[in-house]
Image (cartoon, rainbow, N blue to C red; front, side, top):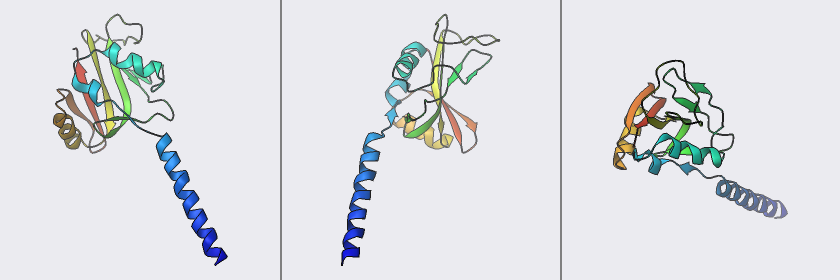
Length: 149
């Protein structure tokens, strides 16, 4: 009888701890910003300020698109999919490093998510997003990209 009471308490405490942990770790959805009505500065600056992404890009493409890694512990999502990288570049903006090739015109931003292209595109279109959806790695990574406002 005492052993079953201990197991009951352990189960209850475990459930409470799991509930607290899941309550404190939430995802920040980027869906509204991926409506393609914004610009790279307005998309990236709040993510940097709130420390959702690392301030130094993990990669700068030749066309100057900067790829930022989500900060450790941040859980970014786009259309329900986990974000692998945040992308952006705006001409003459100090937030972004310049690549060694011809930069994209004006402004471009988006994300790379973990998920198959068809599913990502279906979810994006359901929200009315006009973003370009592009397969990066088959069945694994998909880019969601907006050019200019």
